[in-house]
Amino acid sequence: MVSATLSHPVPHAVPGRLQLRALLDALRGNALAAFPRDAFSEDVLVQTFLGRRHLILSRPDAIHHVLVDHPQNYARADAATRILRPMLGRGLFLSSGDDWRQQRRTTAPGFAPRAVRLLAGNVAQAVGELIETLGGSDAGALDFVPVFQTLALEIIGRAIFSLDMKTHAPELRDLIINYAARLGRPSLADFLLPLGVPTPSDLLRRRFRRRWQRLVTRIVAERRARTGDAPAEGPRDMFDVLAAAAASDERPMERLGDQVGTFIVAGHETTASAMFWACYLLASHPEVQDRIAEEASGFALGPDDAAEAVPQLTYTRAVVDEVLRLYPPAFVITRQAIVDDVITGIPVPKRSLVLIAPWVLHRHRRFWNDPDRFDPGRFLPDRPPPPRFAYLPFGSGPRTCIGSPFALTELVLVLALLFSHFRLALAPHRPVTPVGLTTIQPDHPPPFLLRRR
Image (cartoon, rainbow, N blue to C red; front, side, top):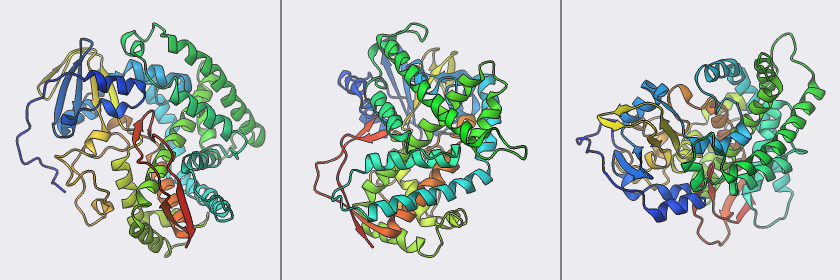
């Protein structure tokens, strides 16, 4: 692995135009196709599209400028807001300015160490039930995509909302999957029209939002009916934190619903994606599976003990880090300049689009040796850390993902428990292609084979 300091002078930005074929592929649903080959070797790639400047940044000081030093100069791109707003509304992910700062401050207690400990217990319980189900079935080849989506929803329900999500999981999955496949794919109009001017897709997205809000409202009502208001001694789970924060909003029920929707989508979609890609990679690496199982055998991983074990599962954590390097669920951070700016000497006119892409950074030739190879050893404690801003699975700066401790705890425990009980392989299948939608998904679900250890 190369050191954090680049040994060669940083080259000038490389001019160029976005290839029409790549753009059309991206608009049809695979956003990964929009990254040209040069992006994986150049520090800055400058392109033009429809008269606007686009920059793909892989230069550490340029990324620092946008995400850490001057985040106030950039806002989420209009097309991304159009796509995410029907599900996330005015929640934490899409808010900005003082509203975002207040939301971040009031939701932070929900991610305190005590909450992470409770999460670990719920993960262990949910995965234990899944292992029992898988071990007692004779289903042959398995499609792990819905398995992990359902598992992630169940963990969200128990750990964050104190609910069994089995009743709601089918409708939630159906809404999220169908939205990502249809209305979650940006059209040319989504890029061209100002945010205040609705596109044809926006009209359908409004219809979706009404259905989504009805479902979230039912989940909120069930949570309140089962557990009542927050106890005097403090919040019991994330829902109590969100409800207390929303109470002061001018539209408290809408704000609460948007926050619940935000954490359901963000907390399930990204982790389910990472679980799938971890199993897809490990199915071809039985020696890594065995090493995870050997490490896990030294610990009690039941609901009461899992939290203490997680920090000591160092190899399993290295595997998770390498999975997130190769298949980062949040594969691109998109920002739009709201003022004229200059990034490391490069003029950035207002309305320019700035892309900071973990999909590119994590496979960049300057930062990684043999970047397309799966090698958990890169992240073991005795190895040098990756170059700063070369590894951003959860973003960076003030808007770094607030739920990263939850995600890492969940992923480490899922792998440790799953491979403690099973060996995993792939049945014959055609090659799987990663597709960039809201997260990185397989273009088709490959068949997995499970065998008891």
